[in-house]
Amino acid sequence: MANNSDAVLDSWIGRETMAEAMIPLIGKLYRENNVLTNIHGRSLINQSVISLLKAHRFARQIDEVELPVEETLPLLQALVTLQLGAASLDLARLNASFKASGSEDLEAFLRAELAEVVDQFGADERSSTDVVLYGFGRIGRLLARILIEHSGGGHGLRLRAIVVRKGGDMDLTKRASLLRRDSVHGPFNGTITVDHERNILLANGTAIQVIYSDSPATIDYTSYGISNALVVDNTGRWRDEEGLSQHLQSTGVARVLLTAPGKGPLKNVVHGINHGTITPEDKIVTAASCTTNAITPVLKVLNDKFGIIHGHVETVHSFTNDQNLTDNFHKGDRRGRSAALNMVLTETGAARAVAKALPELEGKLTGNSIRVPTPNVSMAILNLTLENGTTKDEVNSYLREVSLHSGLRKQIDFIDSPEVVSSDFVGSRRAGIVDGLATISTDKNLVLYVWYDNEFGYSCQVVRVMEEMAGVHPRQFPNIDASAVPATA
Image (cartoon, rainbow, N blue to C red):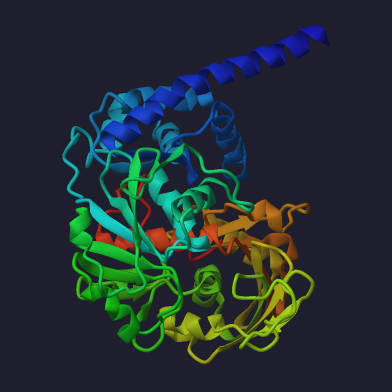
């Protein structure tokens, strides 16, 4: 028994050693080549040894076996020799493709598989796009975290400034503290310092200019060295074209993205569904709502396979900042009652908003929402009547396959654990996670339960729309057609 225990410990130490050897290789690819590495969507950038080993362990949920670090280390060692251009690489899928190819020459395989970016070091055709966050609340700070995490060698989206109303003499220090610490999402992964003289926050080498203004139309961004900027309005104060157009009156602004459902003719974009409709002529785009992003991809694939006659969406949603902490006056119905003590029945426009991204469901959905006393992670319950009957096993098998191998794998996740609860999904980068064990199917009647991190998961969707607007999304390998959805389970 002692010998067996020693062998297990020795094996663990060996894997730790290999994971440690991976860290500088991942960093070199990221900072020098603008190459992002992941394992089934789990980023490997700036991760600890234990986090890397956990990512390898996570692969068993998809491939049914743990991804051996003994195989990914040689993969990384080969990748750093190829003088790669900017790309996003899934090591698990690359490794699986290599094994399936039957080749014994790893470098030759990678040169063929990644031919578009091999020997393209420094030839990144993407231009940097300046980003301004107008507002720095829950979504604004999470967008900042993601943008800083993705900063790499400086290409792509560059967070240059935030615009806020000054909250007092200690405003800059307070803003830094809110970015540094978060009660829901934990501490910032890195260092933050404050330059009071220049009104700048320095976060992991990213200099973020803090601009104080009460008007979106009167800022000269060029005076801060910012030009052709993408302004991301996360205040929710203006929701229509007229209001959001004020940003375009400021010098140095090229386009605007709203992190809320837009009103009127503005395009409501759910990445993975209708992001291809964005054109250079669209100066103002909206990223819809967290709930719309969570349910639209799932509804699309269900409609594609089974057909949806009609349905009802009920969201069990965490309380938000627009509710009262204790009972007090509120212009909205019921939202004046204490968010921390009550379930609050309210309405949601998500069901109607789905049709803006998915016109084939126009008029087929109704919706309501119940706000509950949790700070983050919500659930959408989809009660659907289908054109074609199905079973729980068929639906779950299909959705699991979609979550793994379709063009919507960044939007849809699938889980069938009997122990998960809402807090387990804090930090999920997917728009929605189907809870397979909760699925109910009786022929043409289907009830699905979809978890979603209404803060971080939504923010990831917003960044994907930003990348689409700026044209800076790196090429992904192995490539999966963004429009591909499995026809069968």
